[in-house]
Length: 314
Image 1 (spheres, rainbow, N blue to C red):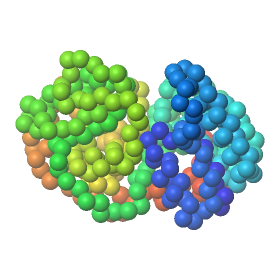
Image 2: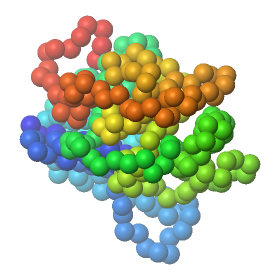
Image 3: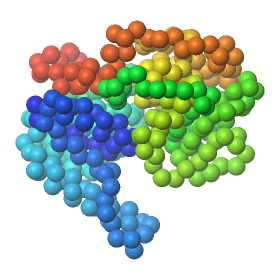
């Protein structure tokens, strides 16, 4: 099968998916965030404008070279230049969109999804509200049995400031429980008055670095964005590495891998982290359940033969 994958690969997860697909299919992977060599004298807004222009031009060339696209997958099309999306759709035989962000956060009206043959979303509410197909994120590694440790009591990496109050509450609760050796990373400008273990950074982190910290932590922390019900990649990393999770995402209780021994769902009004949760062993999840969230299972659904669409969905 000839597959074209068009995206902004912010976390590096889609590059992993592309590599997985390449084992059996001919894949053209177009990441508009891929590094460009720009002159050093370009600074600030001018640099951003030039980079955006050159990225779009390069992506258009790659789309043209790969056309026609037997199977086209666009991830979060609302985050991409409309020229790219339109050009890709015009050259594709079968068109699929996957939304791993909420409809309200995507700069794209729902009717703009009409040209796609199938539209998947990780968010259960959006799936029901807009007649889309519900599909979770995936485990982005084929390999199993990674070495792990308990160097850090807990770990999170996130962007923005809107979830900092929840993060501070978790930091204080871990400290109070005697598990204060955690690593919390936030992309954004530093904020004063927060726990000293909350570190701020600017440049995007590599997936390899993040994965290393994940494997070295006893518990992973996930704070859902306001308005989301879908699960972030943290849950699938936890399945891969055998790690517990502290989260405020209530919807995780609807998944077959949910076990309160492994996943602590926080009370919205007060952060309470029992010592028992922190100090008891992870309960392994059955292999056949973990496999349901693999890249192979995910790709088998997204690129399944046409003619099997459910009524009422695209």
